[in-house]
Image (cartoon, one colour):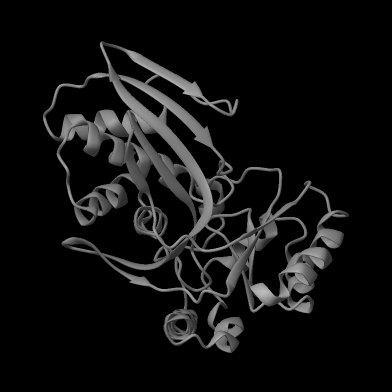
Amino acid sequence: MIHIKVPATSANMGPGFDCIGIALQLYNELWVEEIDSGIEIVSKNERIIPTDDKNLIYSTIKGFYEHEGLNMPGIKLIQKDEIPMTRGLGSSAACIVGGLLAANALSEKNYSIDYLAQMAAGLEGHPDNSNPALMGDMIISAVCDEGMRCIKLDVPENLLFAVMIPNFALSTSESRSVLPDSYTRSQAVFNASRTGLLIASVMTGNLDNLRIAMDDAIHQPYRKKLIRGYDEIFKTARESGSKAEYLSGAGPTLMAVITDDNADDFEKNMKSVLGRLPDNWELKLLKPDKVGAVVEII
């Protein structure tokens, strides 16, 4: 049996729309083995999941076998999902990455992580989710004619991510529907300058730059109207000492970047505000995952 652990991811980091994401210490796990025939799919923590070939992990495994021209075996799949679905934390990417790693191990193809990253980006459509899920830490991704290129950055050890999750879903398609079809030159320059500053700030550990570096003119100003309490939550986060705030993925999860020496006070202040807002907000303080997905033969 193969055991795989895949981290949650937070993409679209500030100005890094569709190109910058980070892995976080919140995980989906799966156990996969071959059986004589058919499909057996079970949830280990009672989350409602598809138990047929529409299951995203299973369909990814099947797609891998078809791509490689291999006969598809019977599959038994056990899932333990901790990453919230349709909340902007990379639940789809975790399923796709988990499925590819399972198929890679079951088939004994043993493809490299770089090869699997290209496959995952093609299937998931958002390398800023799939790359950090595979490789961990903060990843800068660029789609090009040859496929995709990426660089991994080492996030400072003292950073924590305050993950604020409401109890409503927001699909990527709905969130993208509010974005304009074109942008002005000034908006493009605004985001390009902030993206460069964000990357340099993480590389040098200059956290005082993060507030400016995480600003954005491409997606967050348009998507904020989809999330009740957006402005109040970010205002409270700033007043509570966060280094920066941003919308995670397509939303509706909101993120604040804090340092571990401020974690207790920040958590206390934020919980008092989130508790009186609608949508039953949940707060998790998560460290970056430095490793990415892990495969174990058991």
